[in-house]
Length: 444
Image (cartoon, rainbow, N blue to C red; front, top):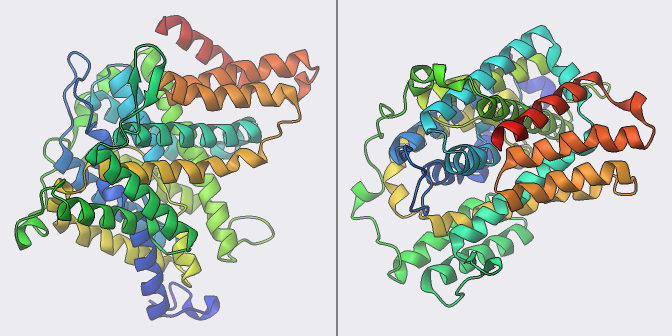
């Protein structure tokens, strides 16, 4: 095994890789509780007509399975210390845009995730992936990531009760003296403190401490005995295979945009994370990523597997950098993380104490981290600034990641043509322009 994972060449050992895998898991373990709450729209009282709520326990199991499969594939096939799990940005898009705003049943949304995963597999195997990624301007890629960060943070503020609806101003400041709001504020403060102190797995520890304070103050019902902490693995029967059962419902302009959004965002997340973590670990060769095809194949197949068991798009996690920082250099780090995801299956009873108010700070913090790419957007060029700005602000203001992407991709060729930079526009951008214009026409 040491030879397979190239321990000697990479200057690592079992102990270092195990600690790195555990560190990565703790850094991303929050997704086990945030994802079920997000996909089940916990905190949202009314759902669109004809739409049911996805089973929270089944999503917990599906999240752990997707994380395990993705991490094991990445570690064994691509041999990178990069872990995978359902991405929080795409989970928010799945729940709040596709299901809540569009009124599309979660079963059909899972079919969209499955199709996007299958397309990703084909694009990876044929080599077309790079052409499509290269067709989309770097500034728009950055804007999409920032916009998703703003959208996630907005949802976090809502779930915390810090921001509430208002008939006169649309949104307003909530009652900061309400007990559950104060609990969320405590969670946000403690998470910020831990992150500022460079504590590994700060988001996870922040959720843990917030839950404990909630139980001590009587705001959250504590688990009863060991059975309230460790229990049977929740069945995935409510979600398993639903992506196949509703495959025929995806043929609409709305679902086309949904599938494209799943695909694009996963593209950007994966490519950016792979390069960032591989660079940190010193695994880049001549500014290129060795075994890139294998890494992308692991990512795309994990998305397909996750959709089948019942969760949103699975993607590579930037939190893997925490494990690399702890010394992880080989794929064995990801294998260890995958093992912990399997072990986590038995801790589903903790879902009862990880409420929307507890996970809200995690969403806000992730939003902050994603917004860091703002500095890399070329704001000095107006033809770039306009589509980037519209992409970013439209996501939280329209409550739709897809709408933000659509506006940015529509305005980009327009501003570039008016500025006389028509030769710089990739032909694929014209195709996307037409698709998104049709999207708004049919949406109206």
